Length: 459
Image (cartoon, rainbow, N blue to C red; front, side, top):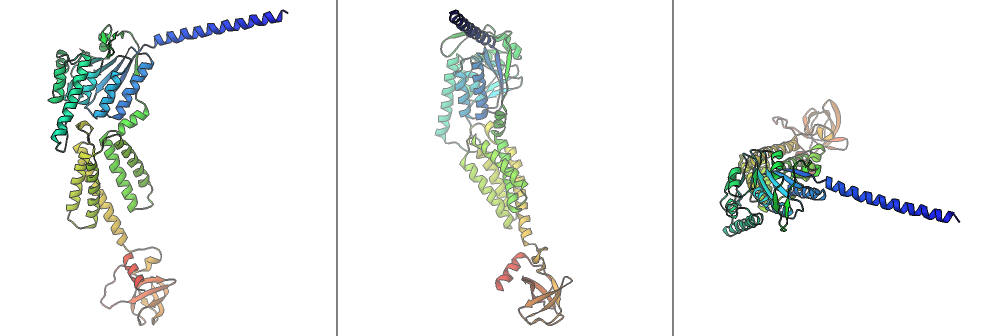
């Protein structure tokens, strides 16, 4: 009778203890969430491309999950791809935490696509000695169709006007940076209402942000609390570092050139193995880097033509005309390879020249050496006997014996050869040498593999 009530008391005690544990856990989570209201900082020191867009997207996601007070993007970029810039801007506008874009350190700039990112921020800040602007769409190395040019310019101008209006910035001067490539120093940008503040460094920026009230895109107002908050830096992952490295068009072009040369060397020298391995890895990395970038078909065709001209130069005596044409074709193809209007995302002219000339020399030299090696006399194995000079030890009519290279061989000739006459080996049939008589005034010559093939055909 007493066991049942005792068991009930025990069960009830466990249930109460469970509720207390759950409540304590919820309180702990709440307190931890409140304590995690840090200020997150990510450094954007790169060209604007898909890899850098992934970094910004991850940084915003981390800041949102941590309920951060703010995410500060320290920005330094010469510009980049419009598509990647739009991805970054869209993610900034949709962020649930305030995003501060800070052009830093002194001497840095946020040009072209970087100007759009700066204008899109909840708070735009610059360090002393920095500049921004020059966001006019351009095309390097070719004449753009006038209609397409105007469409690109008008689209960029409308986009920057929309961003400036959303953030309450100077619409006219923002549009001037697009239409006339106007640039602004930090003091000009602050005076004309393009940015919100100038900060010497990160601590100064945090001090100026504290207590500032901003209006988010949804209409709500937020008072920023950054003073004394822990600063958490978001570092790029290994994958993001590798992608950023490969997405640089200059790096991808250099890797591609190395890969092609290594594979070309392996094809002309089968069995070397190491060039094939290195070349394959370099070429795959280059192709992966190029797939992140907009590629021009015209540039690809010019590079293919360049390689064909290099091969033709090695086989045809053109006195360097074909080789020079290949170098010019490779340089122009490299400059046109990345189909992007921003020079920051294109292959640099110095890199194109520095790669094209050594590549041309290496391919021509490798092919000529390979062709010369194929024409050289074989000096090992049975074929090493072909072309050697000997003496008829017996009469050959058509068979007999000859003395070649200090050895006595059975031989066969196509015509009668008297004893003591000089003979030349022209082929091998089993264990017998095929020889021919040498003319008295005929100088000895070396026989190539091509000569052996012709003699065997006649036989």
